Image 1 (cartoon, rainbow, N blue to C red):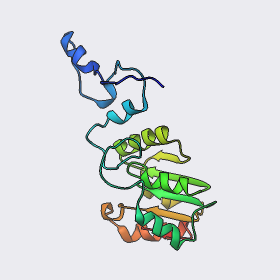
Image 2 (cartoon, rainbow, N blue to C red):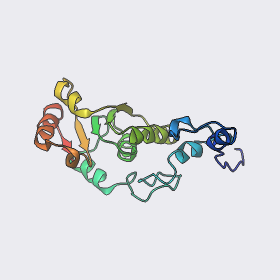
Image 3 (cartoon, helix red, strand yellow):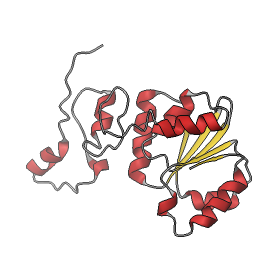
Length: 178
């Protein structure tokens, strides 16, 4: 293990000092620190909602959420089940479901920042899930797969037609956790 304290030296300041322009896109930033998993989390420094295990970021306990534990109990556990998750945010519930033995998790996120956070978390915590970027509404409209469990935490209030979403969710899953 290397004892290097990364400082995340951002090249944006260097570009500006050399007379260039830094557009400010988070994707246009280079770092000069040694590689570390922590560096990826710092891409969104100060913008984490979840307390990611081992990284001490946000305050929400979404990686140890009593609501997901309750849903698991009500469904007889998730071990060996195929799960569809709508709106994973930062991957906390996905992580819990994976650790509980889900056979597969398809997790659809439409917010690009949240999607990238999910990938960072998955890379750091090493769990099995298929994160997909996109709007889950057209997916549900055309989905012919059936899932053992569908998890949708914090998505209904974003919908212009939540009743349609509930109907579509019921078409593709044997159990639903909202």
